[in-house]
Structures are given as structure tokens and as C-alpha cells.
Image 1 (cartoon, one colour):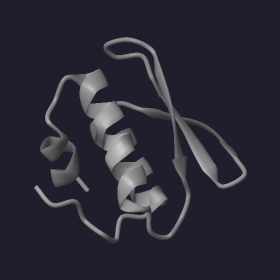
Image 2 (cartoon, rainbow, N blue to C red):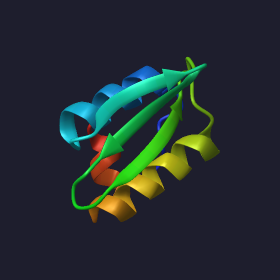
Image 3 (cartoon, rainbow, N blue to C red):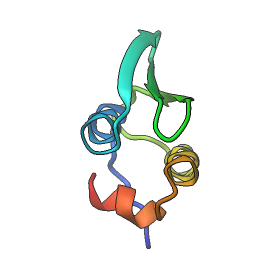
Length: 79
């Protein structure tokens, strides 16, 4: 599946909070810090940029999919 090219950090953050049970902890500079306790503790930083680079988006999606035990495509479908 091809990754979308126009995903903003804010859009990705909202999707992870609404659909994947992450909580927005705080923001340091231009990075939004999210945290989840399901199925175990994980903390990730998302750059709050207008358009995330493909490598950055891919890395975040890979980390979330491995932690939650779902396919990357399921996360992308919710964007």
C-alpha cells in the first residue's frame, strides 16, 4: 500500500488518539508526545509539521503497528 503524501502531524495525532487509544501528553517545541498503556506502555513523538516526510510517517506507522499488533494498512485507512 502506498503511503499518503499529505499527512500532517496534527492529523496523524488526532487519528491515533481517536482510533488507537493514545493520549496526548504534552508538546515540546514542534513535537507532540503521545502515550498509550494498551497493550503495554509506549511513548512516541510526532513532529507537528504541515506535511510529514515519508520516512518519518513510515517509522511512526511501523512502531504503532508493531506495538498494537495490527497491519500498517489498518492505521493508514483511518487517516
